[in-house]
Amino acid sequence: MITFEQLQSKQEAICVVGLGYVGLPLAVLLSEHFHVLGFDIDTKKIAELEKGYDRTGEVTKERLEKSSLTYSADPQTIAQAKFIIIAVPTPVDSHNIPNLSIVKSATRLVAEHMQKGSIVVYESTVYPGVTEDMCLPIIEEVSGLSLHTEFGIAYSPERVNPGDKKHTIDKITKVISGSNEAVFVVLEEVYGSITNTFRAVSIKAAEAAKVIENTQRDVNIALMNELAMIFHKMDLSIYDVLEAANTKWNFLPFTPGLVGGHCIGVDPYYLTYKAQELGHTPEVMLSGRGINDAMHVFMANDILKKALQLGKDIASLQVAFYGMTFKENVPDIRNSKVVSLYKELCSFGMKPFVYDPYVDKDELMHEYGIPLVSDRDDIPVVDILIVAVAHRDFAIYCIDELMYLTKEHALIVDIKHLYNKEEIEKSGRSYWSL
Ligand SMILES: NC(=O)c1ccc[n+]([C@@H]2O[C@H](COP(=O)([O-])OP(=O)(O)OC[C@H]3O[C@@H](n4cnc5c(N)ncnc54)[C@H](O)[C@@H]3O)[C@@H](O)[C@H]2O)c1
Image (cartoon, rainbow, N blue to C red; front, side, top):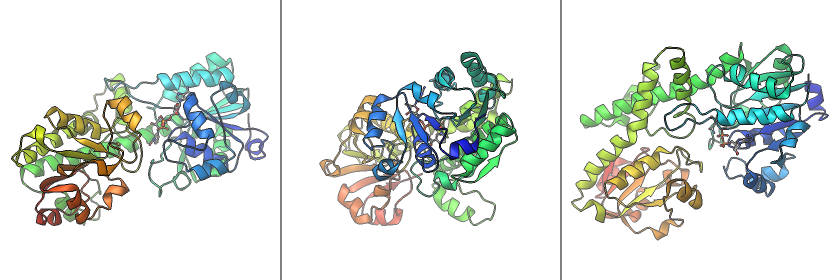
């Protein structure tokens, strides 16, 4: 089996399979210590990376150019490494059923090329059992190699939070697990070179740990969303309530909002799928998912009520929508619930201008058919301003800026609770938030 010393001396290489939000920053960081080869099937992405451009915005041009990491779309690259990290997407289908086809095909590709003595590490988020019960048999069958004697397998979930410059990989404890002690030791030393590690007792425990981290967040946000809906009926702001409740030492600081993206809104479905397969219907998790998945409908209906108070025909209102990504400070529009909110409002007859300095215009058009205004100044002064994402560019808007963007009696919709309600109302505008 490959040893840490061989990797440390750069006699043997690491290959990262899948250079997205997770794989690329990891590969760049590892390349500061090891000989690292980056592999991705997306040839356009490889060409971009070769030019020093990371479309996810996670790694700067300067860091990419300084890095010794190499990029390739040729699967032969995998054969040049004995420590192989798989970081490919794990989405759900339109029925919220885990779609493991990408993990399976990446596994097959790795198995076709891997050498004897390799360790294959999965970083993709999965439900307990995927690594050992689904991927391992594929590797054994395709490669013809035997576990323990000829290769090792491991799971180490990625907990990175894209767009978050504080909790970077080097500051996040890496949970590791492996098929035997020798594999554990190599993982401990490889990942230990970039951050601190924690040994999970088994591969399944490590898989489960990752999936419950996001499930816990999802359920807690769902509770906040439910409370927000109840308090709306009482004309109470959930934020005023939370401010008071948060003064208790054991009150958890969650806030309501739209839960999109490909982690928090997806990972619970991996666990609920497995639970149902085992004959258990997970009521809390599914009910939380249901609330979060429909939150945009509640928001849209409430915004509509407020918009009707402007006394104009909905279709004639000038509306601007700021932010389309699923969360702040990233260009990621996958499973964005902001898009769902936008579409819901369009179904009422609104025709909002859309502005988001982080989003790729062509991608937004291609994925959702939504036109993007590249220059904010091309948007007229509006009747309704909807700030849907807490991008740092929007979070810094002061009252003068908000007044500049809106008409005198406009409605300002503050989805992320960024602004001061009293100041806005004093300016003659009306205000909506959860
Ligand atoms: N993005 C996050 O916030 C985050 C955080 C923690 C964990 N995760 C998990 O990490 C995994 C990867 O997520 P991501 O956000 O990096 O995805 P991503 O879509 O940004 O990147 C995945 C990359 O894998 C490539 N790919 C697909 N099939 C491939 C194959 N067969 N061989 C080589 N490359 C292939 C794609 O071209 C893409 O570049 C998922 O399981 C996700 O749930 C994501």
